[in-house]
Amino acid sequence: HVGLVISTIITFQVGMISFLLGLFRLGFIDVVLSRALLRGFVTAVAVVIMIEQLIPMLGLAHLEHLYNPHTTVDKFLFLLENAWTNTHTLTAIISFASLTCLILARIVKARLRPHFPAIFYIPEVFLFVVLATVMCDVLDWDDKGVSILGTVDVHRGGSLFQFPLTRKNLSYLKATTSTSLLIAIAGFIDSITAAKQNGSRFGYSISPNRELVALGAGNLAGSFLPGTLPAYGAITRSKVNADTGGTTQMASFITSSLVILSIVFLLPALYYLPKCVLAAIIGLVVYSILAEAPHDIIYYWRMEAWVDFGLMSLTFLSTVLWSVEVGIVVSVSVSLLLVVRKSSKTSIKILGRIPGTNKWKPIDENPEAMEDIPGVLIVRIRESLHFANTGQIKERLRRLELYGPKKVHPSESPSRGQTNVVVFHMADVEHIDASAVQIFSELVTTYKSRGVQVHFAHLRAKQIKKFETAGLLDVLGRDHIHESVADTIRVIETGR
Image (cartoon, rainbow, N blue to C red; front, side, top):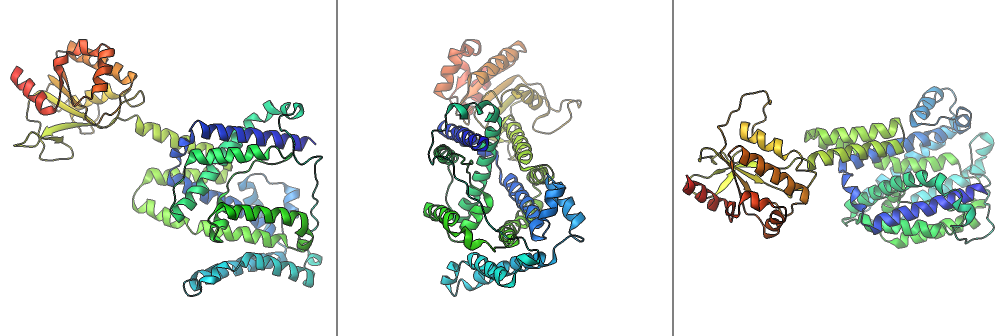
């Protein structure tokens, strides 16, 4: 039973990876999952599922086994080649009639719910499954070529519980690690996407770390049942759960209990259930997901949010044209690059004085603010400084000295006069790491070599301590640390 061994050790590794990611609070990786990325991924998954379900809905499952198309594109081309010539007519009629009836039932329920609240609890999907099974038996659809569920073999292993880290299981540990890691990442993204969708729909917050711990613990527990596959949340199943009124963990408990009871006792009763009806039920969920996409697409287009629109499109195309795994890797990688790109650009503003006051405001945001002291450059750093966003601070300051806040080509002639004094407004800098202090040490040394004075205003006590530890105060001088910009300007003007 090699399959049981491999599935067991993969489930154990997936559970351990997820659990440790949550335990060490690494769930923050979901910050790269922007709404645009999630919309592209969810829509692409819906399209992938729909293409896969169209094959049994058209009665082409037997041909699929012969052609064996692998990717979504292969399956789409397979449908184009065979839909008009090899479709099983009765299967297609049953499929699309079922899908149409289910969609109409949802629409009718939604419209009648305000007047008849109890109608929401009518299980139209379950009733349709029962009706389709009975009709198939009575009308002999199976004899007319409609594929049915038939007899489902349920094989049981030697024992119900078994410790997953046996010698035989561990022999496959190294060979399955890369697969387990991919499953853990893909499963987490799928789960957190579904969780965020429901959280947005029902108004509750999501903790990625708790999600990871819970998913990991669940898979670790499942690995003690030989042959258990890794379990994560799914977009379509979460959508079904939400649409049918499930709001607590009790819904999952009851659902899983009914699934176990159905496998053990009710499978014979579903012998005549047409497989195309099952595909139509999945198509109903896909329809509800795709119906949400136009709103976001139109929104990003109207807002001219081209980066978000591009990320959504890239995620959608890479998932549909290649695979879900490739879509996840490409979209998350691009999103990470965008995050790094934005975080590496420190927000720096040139300040000017509001006439008649001792207030300084950014000159590119306040037209009345003026740089009224020749040769003095006052810059406000608007965020904490760390190794990621201080690498380009020297170049940014050089450009501000030469051209001000305007975006110009470096080959153009300088538009500002020579700078003799640089004042750093540090009120917004809550944290500064060792790399940033090093950069400031180099800046101060460079400015002093050019004969440019450097002053700091609104510097916090813990930052002064870091400057002192790094020896920067010895180079700068304690008299160049001031309480405010007004005090700094007063000292500069007095010195002149």
